[in-house]
Length: 418
Image (cartoon, rainbow, N blue to C red; front, side, top):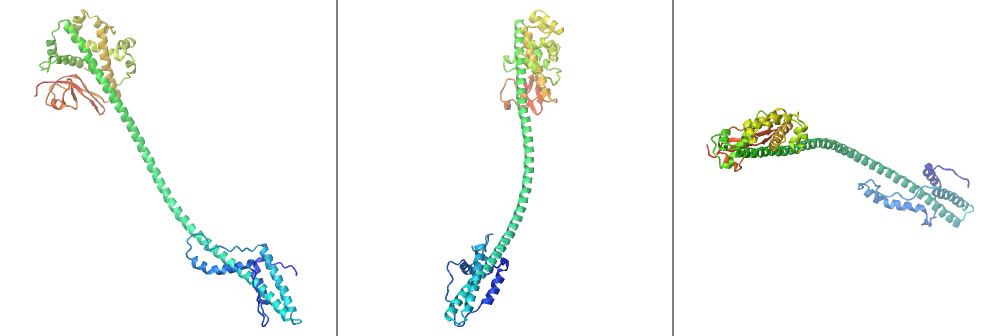
């Protein structure tokens, strides 16, 4: 047989035309030949058996998978070789069929007829299997296209959702940025508050130290007056007259009031660095090291104001210390050392107040003022609620207003209600 070159794209037409020409049977002759069970074309029968089931489940497919599996049959070289072999065998069988008629031989005609019909049936199966395969491939492509459309719709929905999420993310980022700024502001405010608490606590310590130093200087002053036969009753009366004291020992507060009035008289609150001053344990060392400093001038001026010449002459029999102070020097005596310590704390108190608040103020409570627990503190202690009906006789420590903080003035209250 001559070799035939056939394009696979025209196989159905070739098979159809060939079958049309060769489609015949001898009168009274029927084929009893069955297809071989090993024939690959038998797979076509399975395709038709499952076809109705596939149609029933086609509309129920909700995924992107095909509704059925594509047959495993493929038009490869081996299958094409079988196809051409069948065509060749059909030609030979047809030739034998013609030869059986001349001379006429019924047995050979029946045998040749069965062989021709068998080969034609095989070709028919090839054709139907090919068409069904193409049909299933087309359906698969249609399912794939449908799946693609669904996927595109899902992508579009997801992209829209993604855009919404990005918009929400930007809004959240903006909110986070705003919250961070708020947090930074709160941290800064907390830092200021912490610094304020520390500053208030530090100022409270300086305030108490200054009050104690005044008390500490009043003790040797009273002791020296007693030792030099001063009339303390007259001295107290001259400081603050017509005061009824709860007990005789309370008269010492009159001396503290005297010292306070002179130490804070005309005092201006100016910010000043007191770090170096606080680094010395003995204030006389500071006065010696910095004799021309503002503190040195303050100390000398206040000594001349607090310690009257009559006091110094009575206490020490001379005015030597006063003379040195007037010359801008500072005597190294125990009495002057105690005074310089008191002057140091008063100076630090004023400088610290101005450093914390340039608008800081000193306030003094006048005699006869009704007691107020907001601005005053009794020097002898007691229940503030019980002291509200009492009046102020004199102060032993002025009050300070630094920022929003109030440091109470120490006062001695009258022992009779007014």
